Length: 504
Image (tube, one colour):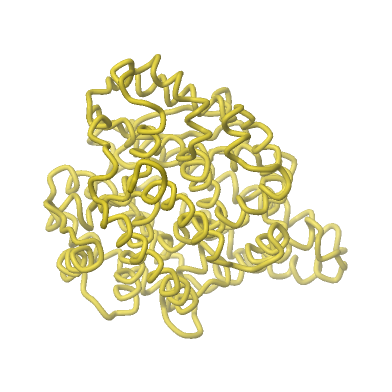
């Protein structure tokens, strides 16, 4: 077998992995959206079986042999072949360390836990979910130990979502941001009543919210012929495969922001997935760069675009046609209300300034859980204490505390940091984009969303996983991870909101 033949065998192996993963994603989407109440037990068996099959294929001993032979052929560092080999080696190396039985048990446990979490959240009953979380934490600790790490168990988990990121590095990033966040909250709290957002809590019929959300998602580039919008307890995006990228939201008739900004967020994810090159599907170069970059796309469309004044100059007339109840609200007043800084117990409803604290909280708690420095039973109290100390509020019920996110029930320990990294990347991307295209406010006000989309496609979507996240952000911006653009972006917005005209 020569190097080219070995490489082709790796491509075939990789595509089979993608097919299994795609099938699991479809089953998971159905479980979150449509499965009958009595179907969860059987579904967990299906997902556990496919997870084992996936892991068995990942650790196929022939793969190591193929990688060794294929590596004798030199590839340019910027080529698809080079990137694919890098990622395949990484996948296979990790997979050979994780026992099959652990993979299967984790898949079955998390599938069951998600349905229990939904019930616990609906009933605001932490005790119902606690034993499942205890088991998941134990299994994730086992996974971390099996995978190996240099400094602490949590490193083995965060690396799954943001390759080469460590707990210590993320801790330093979050600590460098914390003073700015607290200073910004202090500025806003000096004028707590300067922005009126009371009109956002009127009655907004669910069906009309859906119509408007679908219109905006389509207008900024989401292809509904290659996707769909549904309802779930926690909004998410499901990349089933080329031509099938689905999004969900949840509705609140008393506040249209809940569903609308979730739709924008998930559309950001979906635009990335729909923009990946179909010709590379089934290989790493047909994947996103990292989950940090994926969240950057979601946060970019949700916030840098969706909360900009230019965006609403374009869409506000259409919004008024859907919701004439807002006819008495001027655009400027509406825009300020969408951006008001107001501590909230709910992460997905948090403003851009306080959002980072929600991530820092979750990172600190899950890091302690995985490193064995905290018990699951201590989580609700530690959660409430952090919220009181840093945001001045406490969850009024358990569903507003540690039960609000689906992530831990799904075993996604190490994921939360990518949300904050996404905010940082998004601001860096915005700054680089404006150097090429000019002010995004101007583009948005004229509805030039496809100009923005084309830039993202050229610089991010089309690259797939050809570069590591550190390489990609450096190629786009000329720098590594940098919090300065994010701080500048928020500082400028806060000045307009709280120190500008009409805010003495």
